[in-house]
Image 1: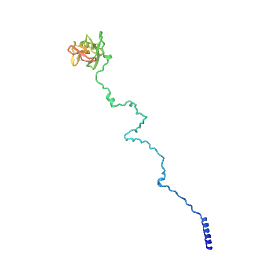
Image 2: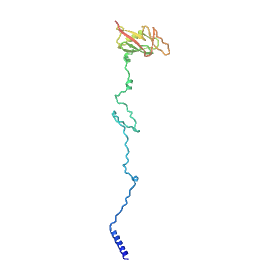
Image 3: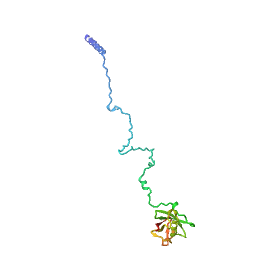
Image 4: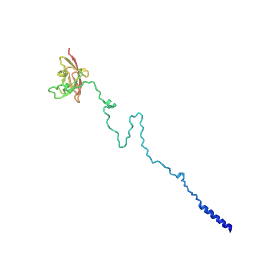
Length: 209
């Protein structure tokens, strides 16, 4: 009995001593699996539109045309020329200029219908003369007189002689000059020549000796 009671007392002393000692605390640490951890990420950024590279030889950066914009249709700057414009420019010729106000001879009295022809003088001047379209037709001699009466030419029968040439042939004074009529057979001869409307008759002027 004495042994059992002493052991019981010793156990109570040990329990009291253990209760008075501070007890260690255990914290359970939870570790997440590596695959389940959410990684932090940066805010979503929208990439900017790519700008076309500018070639080294380009003087200005290329312009981007949107759907709402249309290419400019403004005319080229003033003073600019193109190859088409240069090719389409009129070519000046060396033909004599016709001044109808100063070179057209007056219409003969009694002429009801007439046809204009051009008398090309050897002094680089053209004279527009109207000849009868019906009989009686004008003769080469009468045509010469019409030129002498033209005061702007400053010629006369005493200072100049005039020879008329048509299609490479010298015309006689008695040769008649007739306009070509439509639907008619016209054949030149020594006595008659046919000239188109606006046709050219050459006149060779020479000073009288």
